[in-house]
Length: 179
Image 1 (cartoon, rainbow, N blue to C red):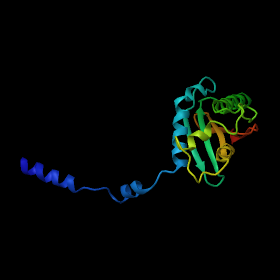
Image 2 (tube, helix red, strand yellow):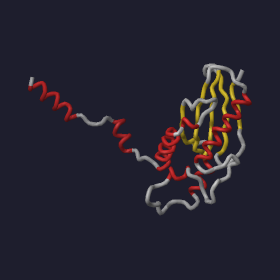
Image 3 (cartoon, one colour):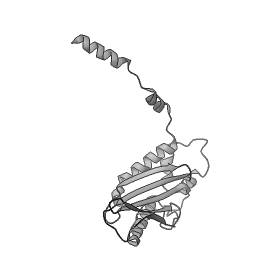
Image 4 (cartoon, rainbow, N blue to C red):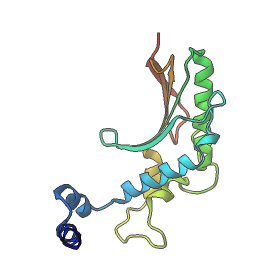
């Protein structure tokens, strides 16, 4: 029994990370990656307050779109029935406005407090110091990159209605695959 134990222990001691694990270990986490991670976790912490038809979102995501150079904050909702589109559109607008308000921007897309940027840019910065190479006006540029998107699935997820608005804007653009 002790010989088997020593052989097993020797095999474990010789094990090392595979090629994929080594690659992942050597890839740095960017401030963009970490900011997206922190922002998504923060939104998940209060997602129950972002209700449409008395329901919190099924999912929350934050992602970066390379083609548009945008940070996308997304909420996804769903229901089995077929609601009136205008009713859903109004509730989507309310959810988007609640997201904006949470980070210091009004429904009109303007900053609520006197300042140069919203609370979102704080997720994309170091704590306690700033890098010497940090571009001036970065926070304002981050705010201009943020797009809010809500996807509302209906009829057991066979159809959807999607609306988006720029974080610093008041226009709501909607489209979808509806019957």
